[in-house]
Image: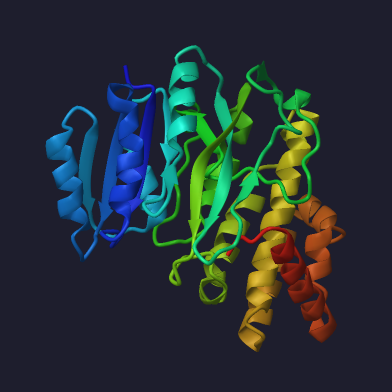
Length: 332
């Protein structure tokens, strides 16, 4: 039995993907590693084939036309046979000790969602920063959303911290957009309503590498690709009527995710400091107003609404807020 399907979306990843794959191979026959060569133009495909040949019962090498990160995830999901599904980006890796602990515990777990910590790992001398959730969730115990406690302002569930049961993802009928960055917000958000039970392990499992200039979280890329975040934010905020979510605490958390997406969608647009960016964030808010008016009325009075105040003063608030958040969590 494969307990975990790891999917590694790769595009021109020859310089670092082997470090990622090697870290996952520790799982042996308990896991499968699906490497998605997303139309790479370097040696990514050959490296994937090399691992498949060497570990035929563990590694699958898939070659497809370029469709972006989301397309890689969707291909991996369609091929996965494991009980749980985990995305690991090709420039990241997992911690050996935490991984071994996870493999021991996962054979006795049947929760819909497993949550673990992740670690921002920098290349410029900054001290690595761990995002933990032990103040929110009970450790090593199955629980429901209604039992979780309050998140700190710097704590958000992310692609790096979540490992959904594959059956939950299948039930969510998720279809991530192609050629779109920041689509991980959808991967996080859409399955929430199909998730009934949660299991948290206080393990620093995922190592999130920060340092490549072309990373999508670097500020120049945030500005360049702000339209991608706006598209994803529209899809997130217009997906559900939150009043229909039965769990009060889950409903509150999902609203918090909407506030987060609207905040960064607005800020990324306004960071450009031009008319196009101002037009873009206004169109985002108009879309929510038209398609989800109840949510819009709440959002306008949130921190996202503060970032959307028109004019130079509003843009000043948005950018200052971004700089302050960056001082708390060095996310790029």
